[in-house]
Amino acid sequence: MTLVGFIPTHQKTVMEQLQHDPRSKQQIKDALYAFLYDPVQVQFKNRIDLIITRNAILGGFSHRHFMYKGDLYNSESTHPPLNRNRLLPQLRADMEDYLKDVRELNNNELPYVLGFINQVLNSSNDLQDYLKILPESVHHPLHQLIDPAPVKLQSSQLSVSSRSRTRTRNPST
Image (cartoon, rainbow, N blue to C red; front, side):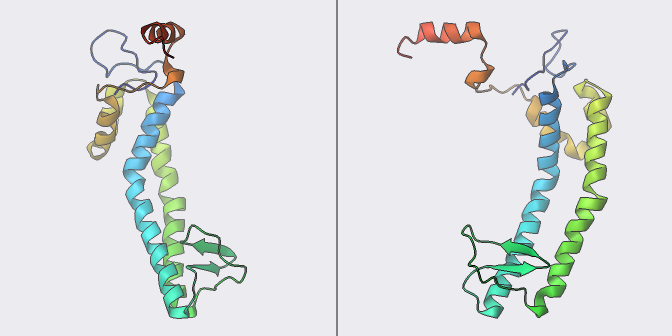
């Protein structure tokens, strides 16, 4: 797959200089974020779902949701009834641990990791530089983006001339 805006300048490989296209760097940033934090988000979702479910079971509530410190935590796709469940006192320690971990991640990890990724991406337009600077453990998503597998283009990515060629080949459209 070739990223939007990745144009080989010397016909060496796909891993050449990027032309200035913010979408390319955003794709890299999104891929790295997903690689690093999707598993963490799943873990946090499982933790809060467990607290919500335990609260509903222990309290005998028919809906899986609760209010805690003015925030609604809901694991159902439907809206909770007007009478909102409250977090039971025996689950407050678990909830405080969960909130502490969320704050820790949001305040003491994410800004630094995303800041580092932004600095790396802003320091160069060369994909080889990214591979040299970023730890080897995060090379996998970069290689997936660089992989020259065929890409299914969206109609917005086709040029006017390629659209007209497509139309002439298929007169039924």
